[in-house]
Length: 171
Image (cartoon, rainbow, N blue to C red; front, side, top):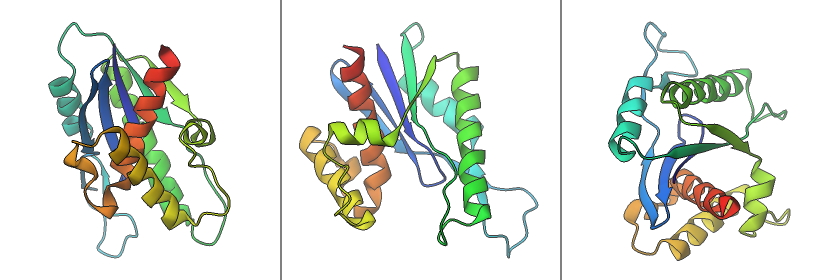
């Protein structure tokens, strides 16, 4: 069974795992939003066609697969603008549609649930430190994977950790 796990958002990522471990991890493909003005806060959207092609590339025909997406919702606060929240939900919808059109069964995992499994839930840790902790954890689990080399690869790390958790939950 192949697990497709996704940390949604324009800077999100997808991991593909099976019983042998991590098969692939990649950033979600994006493209410019047609006709958007240069002053728009959100300039990009998920490139659905490219995402379908990536999933087909990494999931051989005839292989059974399931997908798990981190459950996201709108959040309040001064750093969460209407535009960024709208963009996140637009991205989530595009990812859901691609997965459903690929006929991959889809489920959701709340971040508190899967992150607790890896010890990533700690209110004393700042958000930037949480990202580093996710990277450390993914590097420990997959030491030969170069996809987690940079600090900005924390979304790749989280998608791989989510998939790792989903594989264990299914066992």
